[in-house]
Length: 315
Length: 232
Image 1 (cartoon, chains in turn green, brown):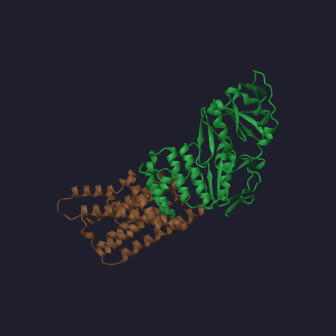
Image 2 (cartoon, helix red, strand yellow):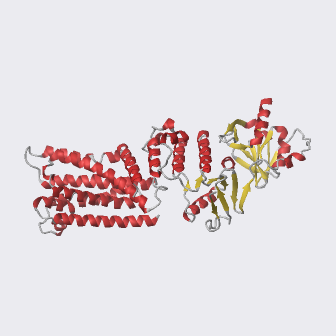
Image 3 (cartoon, helix red, strand yellow):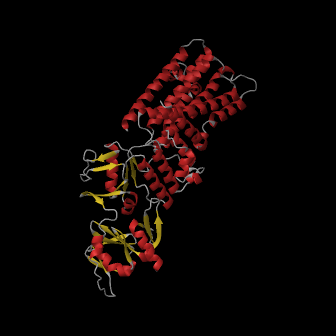
């Protein structure tokens, strides 16, 4: 079993809390933090830990075709798998003859994936690997880190988006000023919430009160996109704006159930009216795509998929 | 040294060269110059040696030094080598791979332009040895500058002195300076002038002086190399 450890010797910085994290090769680890902390962490990993962080900032050869780029890196790193296989693995065979400057953002990202994959680095640390790319590319990435894990190389993914952390990491952590905390991913204590669900009689008039500075804003349940949990507090998200609630997620769930809201994940409640698409990722994980401006995706627990399919087919 | 890496860089840069208009026009400069000179000539009159060496100097400064600098500066500017270079040895592989591309292009440009004018005076062992030493001198100069330039735009600034001082030395004769002036004496010691000297004497001294220049260029390149490797 291979592993590496980030502790105070490496992560010695005034911007970062003291923490220690062991990344081993049996789980893909994802680390959620805000962008400032992530930048600081990437910097110290590179300078103190001598670990190269794959941040997609290094250049590719823009004038050359996708295939020429892959051929070069393949030869440079002395990688064994034949080139056509690499092209197929990263879904690049359709654009193999296109010069890079004519490729889409997602295609270029997949060339980066291929390059990092062939580099044979150990461990592999990725920074924001699936930010702003299409579903196909996200799937390729999931495939790739699965493969890397099977080669017994530890993988760490740094993200600043909770959905991505939950989608990519089998072990997800959250880094804040207070320190590091594991994010419970799935299953487990579902029962506690289900036990005392005495149906509360609600009046027809129901608004969700949220605090913004000193003001109390009342939201119509139907305009809410979804609700996520942050540090035990529920946050409602409407068109990418989030507002803090005074309830826990469990309390909100009970109140909003009758308005077509559904607890699709331990830390998410979704407005089913706004779900546009159920995305199935390659390793049997699911996400829900919300019909809002940024088309945000939120995670859907594996054990909830049956439930949600039933819900939709009944309607 | 790692043969596989060198060939990887060689193949990549050769493909890139063919697609880069900026580099592709460089070898055309001496060829066009050669064509111009043949039109200017008076028919079957032999070419003066110093004119031939203006073409040689142009080839080496505009093709060898310039393309080497540009290729290395582009890698620096676009950070394409980040993550590929783990040790000074891998950097050396990159430099060797690029030198091979530059060597190939220079050879083609030089051969074509000399055939156009008059290749006869060059078919001599000592002269060819002189040309090879000159090539090494300009190549090492290009590598040295390429190592520390951070952008392609900056290369043109560095290229100017290389071109005028080392590339166009024979033209100093035409400036109408006094025979005894210090400028001319200094110019006479520059590598291209020594290469012309090879044609006039049978002594090996000019070759020796060029060799000293090559060693000098190699030393300056080594200093640049050490400096850039410790910077990162």
